[in-house]
Image 1: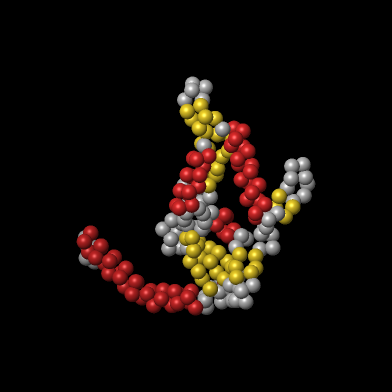
Image 2 (image 1 turned 135 degrees about the horizontal axis):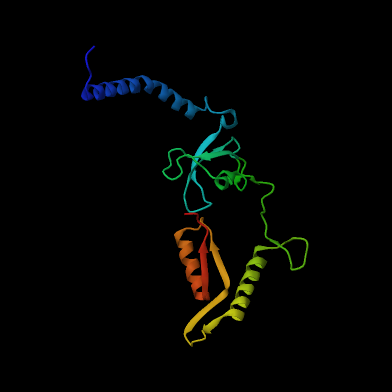
Length: 204
């Protein structure tokens, strides 16, 4: 039996790996084709349309694979294995995207989750019930309360006479679904109001 040196050992390993790759390639191609046609998919996501998307819950930008049925209703969600951020993993918030999803089916009839709130609800101080309000009423009410709070808490100069033009009675927590343009405009508005407490919810 011939003694094998290090060079021969590495050469044989390389040849063996190449041979296994050639043998396994048809099988892998058949498996990929099965995923595309849906023949080998689990029953719960068989005969569905696959759509690539990005999770909007935080600033990480994880990739998602969404599966919808023939009525364009979202029925299943999983992490995208080839995405560089999450590599197929998904957190509970991302996996719960189905619960907050609203779709439009082939007949163009709008459908939504039955538990999803679709209209503004208002509960007056001391009240035990919610009332439906219009968006016009809600926006006007918010504007009035913001102005009232700012007027009552605005400070032009601090105790040392330094001009500060600020209010500490209001704060903002941003959503990761906001794009750069929206964040820019909101930040300008909050600074113009004199707000100091401006935060963000992204888990980075």
